[in-house]
Image 1 (spheres, rainbow, N blue to C red):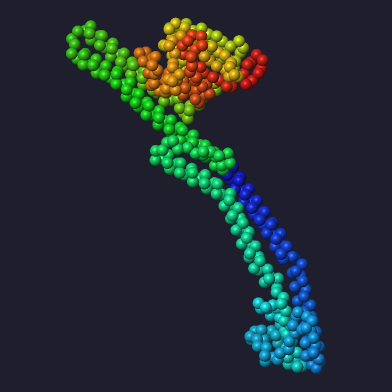
Image 2 (cartoon, helix red, strand yellow):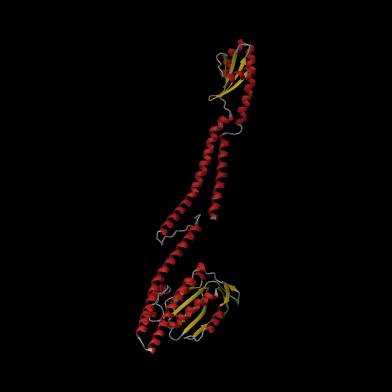
Length: 438
């Protein structure tokens, strides 16, 4: 919005300043300032001349007609003599004329001067084509004003039209998204005034679609995974009701407890996955030395089913992460390797292509390349894990954490052990020994 407001203010100010200056310069060229004093000066001269002529012709009536004829042939201002009876005036003007003995009138044809000649009873008329400056420039001023505002409107429309188009596109996308077309997105242009709004709309749309997809997936998976323990509970309760043997009753109770534990584990897994929402999490970012941190984590594990061959990086590596959530990722990867590996697990810290990697390799059957995109979804398990325990949530949790914490998950084939390779990458790190930051 800052870009929009700044652009609007800049366009308005630039438009007003440039158009105002351009039209003023054009008006000055068409109507120079030197013309205004010329008209005023000529009127002053004509008034003085008119008074002198009226007095001269009033005293020498014999020469008046030849003088007027000769004057009219040589000058643009025309002289004429009329009687007072022929010179009709409204009462207010006649009173003014009688008092001042001179009168200036203006019409569409120009300015005329009138002088009384008391001795002859006549009136001297001087007709000119002069116009007062205000009257002459009034129509031009109005034209220039109209041009100014039309120019401002046109330039503002040129500026606003892309904004209007972007807002219309945003409105259409929002309306379509609201009626269920969740694939609607807006193509964000670098020159867009509302690029930040469009980007946030796309993020919101991605987030809503992801939430809906997760809810659909979780609903289907939960309904499927809960059916088995619930059915076993129902059969166990019916068997308890029918048997009288204490030994059998104890056996059925143990099975019921295992089914309840399985249901509890499923619910806790669901809650853990649901809590991994970036909007609700405030990561506790810390700088940790990765080699020592992983070594301490391995020492804290109690009797792992398979020994872990740990290969740290030769130099100290410091990464910025949230130890709590990184621990969740590493625990899930190690648990996955212990569940599907046969006898060997290898944990390696390496730098490849200027990126720090944590590799967890096992010697199991691995994950087929075509299944990689599916096994990171909740409750989805690969072909090799159909008969294995679990709910298919471990890799989904690792991937969800990595999406917002930056420790992205990559699944491949272990080059030495031949099984699965689960890798976490960190783009930001530093090597403390040589102070080279990346």
